[in-house]
Length: 78
Image 1 (cartoon, rainbow, N blue to C red):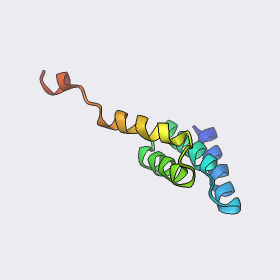
Image 2 (cartoon, rainbow, N blue to C red):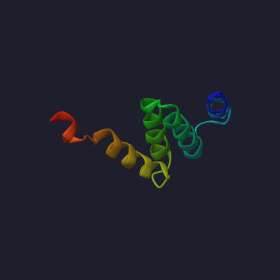
Image 3 (tube, rainbow, N blue to C red):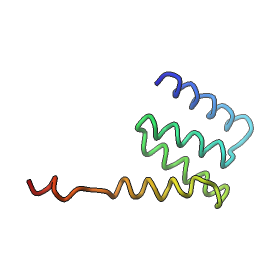
């Protein structure tokens, strides 16, 4: 977990120094997702797509939408 946080810090520093790129936001978004920080991950995926519409982050946005929309009706009707 600390390794992931260090990677996020490194990517954040790169974004601040070199400016935002779709790849950096995409990579940082994947790390945020692994940490369970869904809002930060989705924000980074959206930023990546804004910078490059054909970024692989577009697939992650679709995936996160599916995951966030998923529910099991059996859990609501025991």
